[in-house]
Length: 206
Figure 1 (cartoon, rainbow, N blue to C red):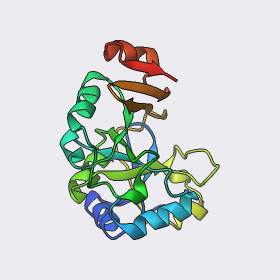
Figure 2 (cartoon, rainbow, N blue to C red):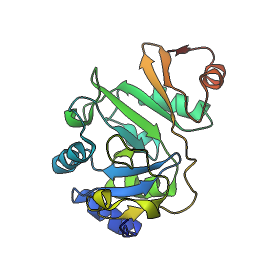
Figure 3 (cartoon, helix red, strand yellow):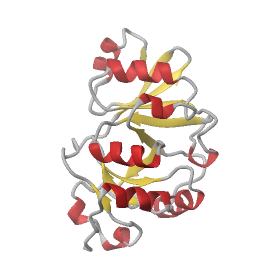
């Protein structure tokens, strides 16, 4: 086990802007943050996570307005986030600002509104949504304790930005936009039934 250097929010933003990878807290789980517009950062993350191009990355933003240009219909996404009392990642058509290297199938972007102070600091500092993928190596369980990051992962990270509150420890619910409906791809902190009730019956279960 190696000690991961704790960063101030300013130092974490500087590292991300420089194309480095930073461990960070979110509302749901610990993640690895990277700048989606920094090509070398995406390349580093692809290598670290053994990620095949075209699979895409989950992104987080601190406000719906931060998603302008990154997704096609910000108003629709914002309406869902307003309606749901819990973390939900939306897979939606990507806008012109989202680089191809971080998109998923069908020219989509996975994006979650996340109010954790660490996410807020990173998005405000970079003035952009950020990639936030799980804190783990391929085929390993996501790490829940920032003090227990293995050395083989630590050496790829510039440091960590965490702080209160502690992540919930469960993944977000995953919804995909299909026309005027939302499809539940994964139940997480919010169940599909709860989402269906809150959104007024426009949710289709996989």
